[in-house]
Length: 92
Image (cartoon, rainbow, N blue to C red; front, side, top):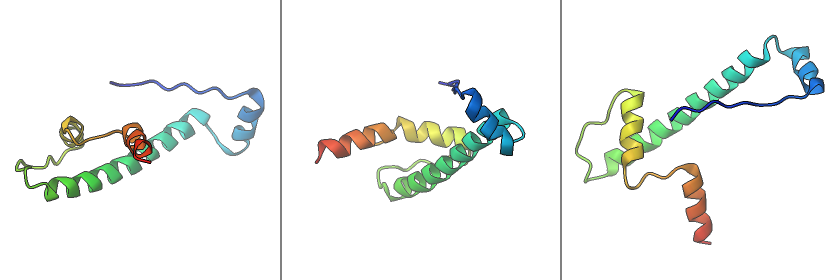
């Protein structure tokens, strides 16, 4: 599933951004790329530890991002952020 994200910036805010930023589209893409990179690092670190501590998991841990993510999201114990938040609010 790939998504396209569209944002709207009014004329005033566009002028504010252009006061400091050369290209708004490039800046937004860079911000998203940076966030993806940080989320990937956290996911990889967290799930590598989880997999290594799971005695029932005996397969190799994939060394490439796509295979790693496919493995993790297919697990029964995987939850998205929204699912984790919903589960924690149910337990309150």
